[in-house]
Amino acid sequence: MATIRRTGFGTVFEVENEKVGIGTTGNQTNTLQVLGRTKASDAKILGISTLTTYQGFVDKEAKFGNELIDVESQAGTLGEVVIEGDVTVSSASTFTSSVNQLTPTDSFSVPTGNTDSRIHCHTAGSMRFNEDLGTLEFYTGDEWKTVNSFKDTGNRNRAIFTSGPLTPGSDLSSVIDKVNISSIGNATFFGSQTAVQQTSMAIGNETRGIFQQGGNSSNTLEYITIPSDGDSIDYGDLSATRYAGSGANSSTRGLFMGGAPGPSNVIDYVEISTIGNALDFGDLFAGAYLSSGANSPTRAFKVAGYISANSTAIQVVTMSSKGNATDFGDTDRPNSTQGGFSNSIRGIYGGGNLRPGSSSQIYMFNLNSQGSAIFFGDLAAERYEMKGACSQTRGLLAGGYGNPASLNIIEFITIASTGNAQDFGDLTRVARNFGATSDSHGGLGGY
Image (cartoon, rainbow, N blue to C red; front, top):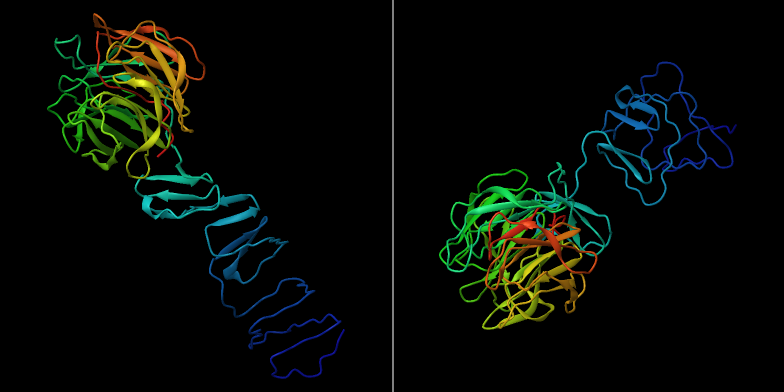
């Protein structure tokens, strides 16, 4: 043991090549303090060390391994503590028990901000709370996506078909039909809309469907709760009166694109879980009406439609950020009043008014890569003014007009394959130019 003969008041106290013990005996009233930085390459603490004065402790208790240390008692046993890598230790309500495991003891807070305050992120898996959307979101490495917290209560795969004209020149209907997409059978009565409708736009997420009343004299939006039957309720208003546009949506945000008269190039949006008037989102690069819609979890598509003649343009916007539409690709030919839907990968449209003549053909396009549509299969007969709804696996094309009359037929396809449509069942009435949506289409899961 090294012998220390005198301790002065210098700034350095150093013992080399030996081990040294420092301690006190008896009940001393003075204190032992080490000020500044203390460094040791080989130090041991034997027994329990008692400090009569200390500073810098914040939490009352700290847990290392299986041992709980009460800071206020100024005593405790400290086992092995290993920290590797670039680690910052601070006062918090969590303990890291291993490199990849975080165990919260009370609460855990992530960064919070609105959509516009998102930073450019370099780390996939980063998470934040979006105050605009009221949900958690995470960074995939390419884009921000929301954490979808919807709980399936067993009523998913429901398609909704709103009211519409019964036959050309005849009365309008206020009836709302429903079907289970995963089964086969006739539609049943869901409820009624507050007014007779035609050529309406529709959107829907896991819980709520929102429809524009339709017709050339209304800008009213109404909503229903999709899992439970019932009549529609007032939601708010579009920014202007229009009809015959197309709808698309994510889990949280719905878009109403284009329409007549005009044709309009306006895109309005709503936050589906709220109630209120639609807000300006941006503009189509070419106004159109009598078109169909499609959606991935992040993007909305307006497919073809009528301008001064039929169009081939597929227009696209990113739903989470407002802005104008850009060109995505083209349909197989100029078309309008075709039925359409999409899962998260494929957009589908079928039939349509070719002016002159109508179509029985079904086409598909990839939502994640730009390009023209390719042939999928055929409907049972030529028809137009029909509407589409889908789940992630199956798509339905319902109603429509096939010379010489409106139809009540519903046909289905399996989206992941190709082939001709098959008989599904019938609507409760013959109808065309109505609205359609579902609680399980391809736009859900996104923001």
